[in-house]
Length: 589
Image (cartoon, rainbow, N blue to C red; front, side):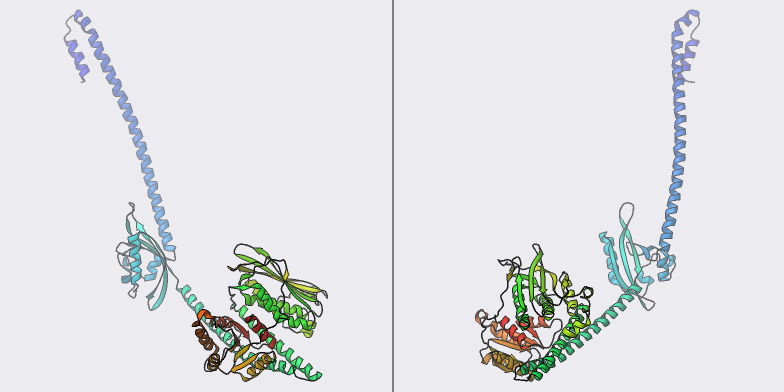
């Protein structure tokens, strides 16, 4: 019984009269009201407890459902992961910090021919007895120690007497607190790819060997063809100066023309072979564009003069004096186009225009136009003009000769210079061939002062008659060069080999040396090296003598090799007396 009820009973037991009841009535009612309040509090607590029980049951039910769903999801994820690991063709494995396997996929089991229970807790050397890659274990420990992944680790292992190539990615494996407890690795079998690469490398080496053999063959053939051709052209030029009859002169003209056509064909075939083999690399050096144009005029002016053509070169004021690029290939392109212009023009003019079409702080785009008043090109002949062996028609071939290789070579060289080439022509009214070439600015940059200034020819200029040392072992070439230069007023001494050239250099006082490259005892490179060494000991290199290389070699790198050896210029055999004299004048200013 509660305290409130006890108090009420005690009061009632003490009442003996009506007066006692009246006196204690308020106390009794107060206790009754207190009991009522207690009952209400108890009811509230009971109801609250009942509600809390319902909420708790609801939460417990929801938690149970969530836990069940989480378990199902985890089970699904585990099944998905298991399927993924089983179907991945790569080798997937987990290792602990001691590099023992703790989990692998089916592909790994098949690779080592063992079930999982035969792999778990073991190291790689326990599974593959022939495994001897120590560096790989060091890389795995590096991943565990550093916490950083490693990618594309290639290794070759020996399995069942065969080489197997693997490429692997490694990453650290962490627990929920972020602590590294091992690593995960994924390896791909790249044996097929590696074998393919090996076979590809062998095929590449065989192809390169074939290319080298081809290049050596072309170099040897070039040398063997050019040497006798030099004798033929030289002797024909000498005979032409003799007092011969009309018929003999006509025969000599045919001989010279045929030989030059053969030489042009040899040169074009060599160039095409080098270009198609990707062996043409442009040099990058400072050069004077106006000097290049003067060299071209010195070569072409005589041919133009024979036809009484108005031959002029104009260069705009915005063209720098110095540019950076390959002057030899630039000269080759211009010479090809100018030679065609002179060849196909019987009267009128051949004019060259040089301008800049685009420029910035680092480079300029040079535009070269060759304008002639020649036979022109019909519309049907323009389509394939820059293709290999393409010519306008057979009639021009019969009259003017040519192989159809020159323009194709020019186009490919222009492409190497990040330029373009094209033409405009009207039948019987003339043609304009143009090309652009991207060249670097030179540190020696300077600009001319007048717009489209004509470059004066060296015509009428008085050249010094030089004392020349000719180092040449071929007797025919000796006679031809000596005769040609002597007739032009030069004094020529002959050395039959490199050692004799050195001796004569020390004994005489020469203005120029013409140095054959291939000679007995000492070759031209060794003789040049000796001369340059002697000159280097002189004060301020004041006694430097110009040396021109004469060689029948015309393959890639021959000119560069001569210049690197200390020679000042390079002339490939066969050459005409005019070619040689023009180069001598250029080198000696």
